[in-house]
Length: 310
Image (cartoon, rainbow, N blue to C red; front, side, top):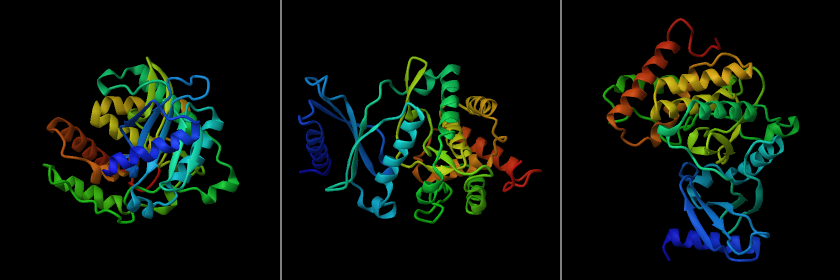
């Protein structure tokens, strides 16, 4: 049996045990690759009162689990925090550790919005969701056992190099140098640790029209400085739409949060941390990202030292 067919069958068997009946439809969803997992949606058409659709994440990448063995448990705990706060996040339904670690959670309504269809209302909803997320209380007694934010690949698990598709490799090399100067004392800013989604962008936000109805994909969430999420959203918006959308989202978030002014170091951490996973980019997108990175470096190495809060 092929590996993908075997994974599907393993998920089907567990979904059947959870509900007591085999799902009528099991669909592999996009996403999950960034955590070495497969994500499925299970639907039951004949049991409306007994079974609602489930999303099941299967962790099948043994190398990834060897690096981050707590991924399944981390997502389960973070879903609990999110649910208790009233965020529109999935609710945990079940969890097993063998033969492969898997989590089952409620499927949420809505769909992702293609970048070309994003409106000012979508940006406002995303900013309000981020503010809500960052206000989720983290019990003091649990903070020591929760993963702390650190930039991707900061420990050298994967080399970060200037991309061979770049026409401006010098700015990437300088950004990578700064990236590895990560100061430990900025792990969670000056206001204590907050819940950080870690993959906050419109690909993980579900809408019905212009109403937000889901924040999904909590597998790499952690605690740290909430501006890490803003940086992640910003580089994705620059990639998809441009500077104006990124700056508009940032202004909406900061205006309503009472937080400190946004520090551009989070743009550097987010973009350079994504570099090993970026494919060759179309010229227009590459130009936007490299202009964004050049501006970020100019700000960080200008009058305000890059490692200091403004």
